[in-house]
Amino acid sequence: MDQLRVHEDKPLGCCEIEAEIPTDYAKQAVIDDTYDAHGTYEELILFTEAIKSWCHEAHIPTVEEYTSVGLVTTGALLITSTSYLGMCEDTATNKQVLDWLFSKPQILIASAITSRLNNDIRSHKFEQMRGHVASSVECYMKEHGVEEEEEAYKVLREEIENAWKDINQEFVRPANAVAKPLLERILNLSRVNEVTYRDGDGYTFAHNLKHHITLLLAHSIPITLHEHVHVP
Image (tube, rainbow, N blue to C red; front, side):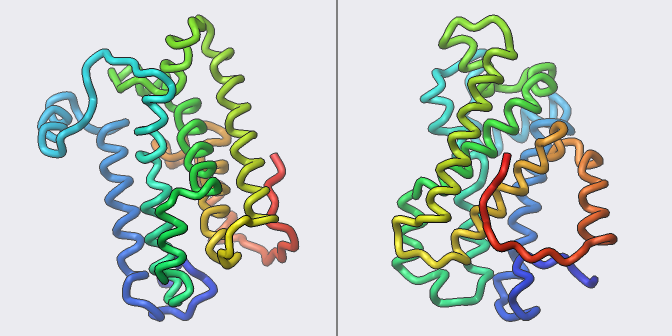
């Protein structure tokens, strides 16, 4: 295997933009990990000034305020739109499709919700030790006067399950005239998020995913899927 492909169903080199997709993902990962895990306090001060961070010290927003920003920071729209460009098809990047995507359809919002909440549940304790901004866990606890984190986890996990119902519903019975391969990109992004945060914060502590990556790349077996429906 010379390189890990984004679109296995497309010929290698079918579209020049595909070569840029891993670079875009890598930039996101570097910025995220710099803040969450690896940057020193002094480095983060300089970095924050450079990119004009929206963070205000000790501010815990409402859940609604947090969501308006938190869903954007998942990168769901960026990753999905970039993957569409890599499909090398006019049907993936025509005006109708892009208008649909940038209207923030329910399946995209639901995917972002699963990513944001799974990340927050698994990573917020470590991040709070580093003086990180409030996550959805802290926002919910403050807004609803909750003292136990487990109570907040329970509510947020219910939101994740509801989001998966939205993903499945739009995938099985899409209300829009959008080709199934376009929906599959969003579905697969959601699946990756589930695996990444299933047993901890696999995004920050990537060694937690070593077993999954080994099975995928070194010991993979062909699987034919007949139903693209998530089973919790």
